[in-house]
Length: 251
Image 1 (cartoon, rainbow, N blue to C red):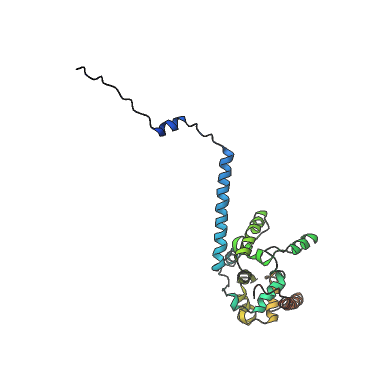
Image 2 (tube, helix red, strand yellow):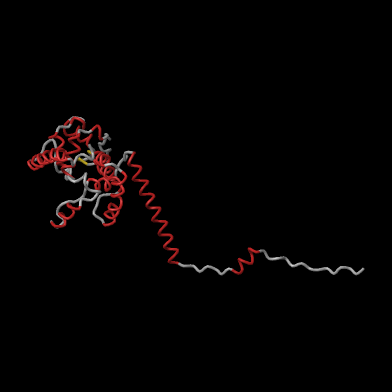
């Protein structure tokens, strides 16, 4: 019987190998790659922003850049003790709103009326809301750079959306500077009047609010004629916003 002829078997190519050989190589597209990276960075930045805003919605900021820099300048720890909004006299909350941001309850972080008025006067008057000041002091730094302004414009709406108005005002009153090395309404009330923030009278609250634009140049316990007149206006304004409902969002 004839011997069966031996057949040589060649290794078969797998389906995956054939597809890999047949498939064309993808061409690198730099613009598409840059777009994807920019999108990823944007999403990461938004996530970080939301995390930071949500953190201070429930936790009290331990310090601010202004407090830290003032402590370095003075060579000592600044005087600041946190107090919840419930521990502050309601007239103090109304006074600071009347002095700094009368439309606090009706705007979403930016007071367009105040901005238009500031532009009309050539930028000689301030237009920053309490919300903007909180963002600047808690998350950013002092100064007038365009970078800081841009970041402030991005963060302020997030704070307005995620925090209550009462929380914004509470944080503001705890980080505002009232004298050299004196931060927050608790330290200010004891520093100037020897009382706790819950015991502030309408006159004392108005005087504290009157010195906020220039805390190192004005005194609440030894007020100049200007501070007395300004405090009288603030006291009237605080009573007005209590009557017309503009204090309802934080009381």
